[in-house]
Image: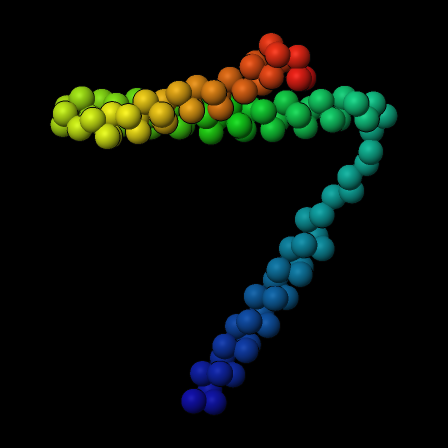
Length: 105
């Protein structure tokens, strides 16, 4: 019993040493640029809206699949869920365009 605990402790220590060595050897300095802070915020906003758009397209695709399965099985409740998912995915996918159209961005 004591040998296996000792082996685990040695393994944990070796893994910890390897992780520490990798972190110390493979780090690089991150230097700030002369970028305008507004540009940085706009780039972050574009990235976030791109991620939201990708999620919306995934939901839109799932809604299309649900509508197709509901048409095949003649299930009205699944069809309504599919259309809700489809329209929700459309709204999420085009959230940035909708917000810019109404003047919120």
